[in-house]
Length: 125
Image (cartoon, rainbow, N blue to C red; front, side, top):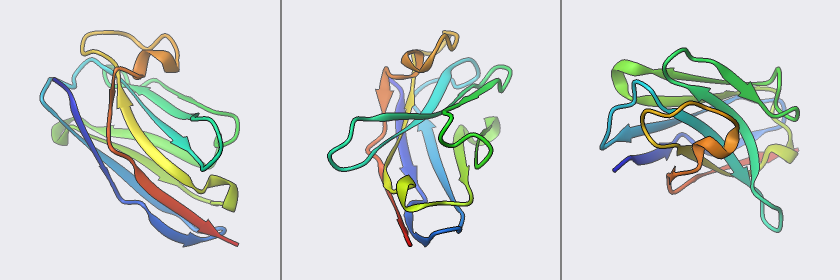
């Protein structure tokens, strides 16, 4: 059973940077689709960034392309989301998620099998 724990959220001023981490356990993470999602109050959950741990292929939502970078450390079973040039519109609860081990990424839906508890990001203007 995949278990995911996010940390690294917090408050930052607009234009600032923040790095989120997601520690994985309970399974092998050598071949698995993982992603970050976010949800702001009153809004639907939004796809942010996705990565496949086998070849580190990535995909980003248009709203974060060029500002956010998803990466992973295989030795630590940890997923990262480096965020820069943050705006108040980036404020949300950020969730780490993954698919079943051994599966490819065929879209963000591939990474919605297991979820972390979320970490809050607040960007002030």
